[in-house]
Image 1 (cartoon, rainbow, N blue to C red):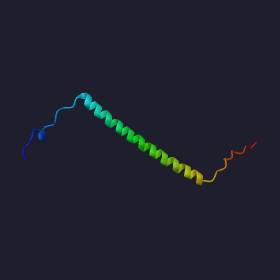
Image 2 (cartoon, rainbow, N blue to C red; image 1 turned 120 degrees about the vertical axis):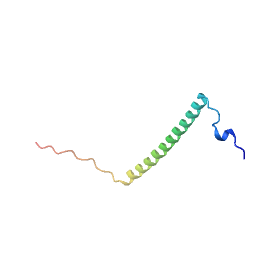
Image 3 (cartoon, one colour; image 1 turned 180 degrees about the vertical axis):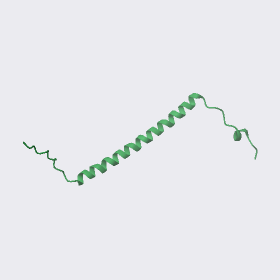
Image 4 (cartoon, rainbow, N blue to C red; image 1 turned 135 degrees about the vertical axis):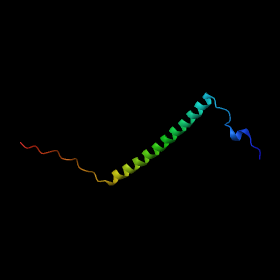
Length: 69
């Protein structure tokens, strides 16, 4: 097996525009993934809250303090 320069040296540098584009693409992917996870969590919590409210009996309004005169 023959050693080549690609094994020892990095391939050419990326241009600033290519680097910025790659970073932008990665950041947008991460943001989209986090937003999707947040939506799933919100929906799951909403369903749990609605189920809990359906099981809980309706509580009467608390009485105010009696005024003594």
